[in-house]
Length: 217
Image (cartoon, rainbow, N blue to C red):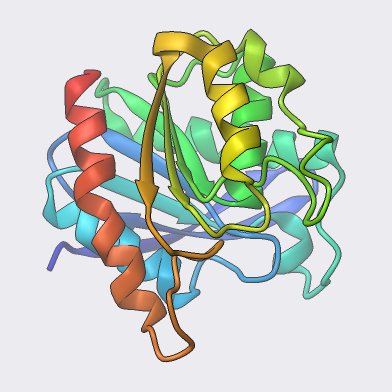
């Protein structure tokens, strides 16, 4: 298993925790979901496995979670924190390509940062929250049209945040910038039953992400 180095990242809202999974290849910055931080088993399992695939990973906490709050940061503060973590990843990378992404909320913030000019090599979405549950007719995809870098959508077909028909419409708008990998019968966290192990699920997604990253470096 790859070595892990813990450190702090300075953001406009204070320092947050971060962990660097050492590998010799390109780098992926991984934002966590809204309800769980960087040490959630899903995130840890994914980062460990992708580092074993040769892709270094940096996971971090958004400031609200670092402060022990439940409510996510507003978009401006969240994007600023993601950019600060991205700068830390660039410094760690030493010239290697840096990709951005994350689980649900973390992936959405990564896409918003990219739409505002964050110079990522590509984006990796682990369950993109395209719309609120029950509101498939209101996709939050306008900013994605301004993202010109490659994007990978790993998505459960039973994800209440990404109706397959609505997602298909978004993917058509994005054209060849988007790569889609469906996980049949899987939910928002790629679970198929309550007994599924979150760490193992996260790890199972790493080969798809690593393959995409290698194709775009």
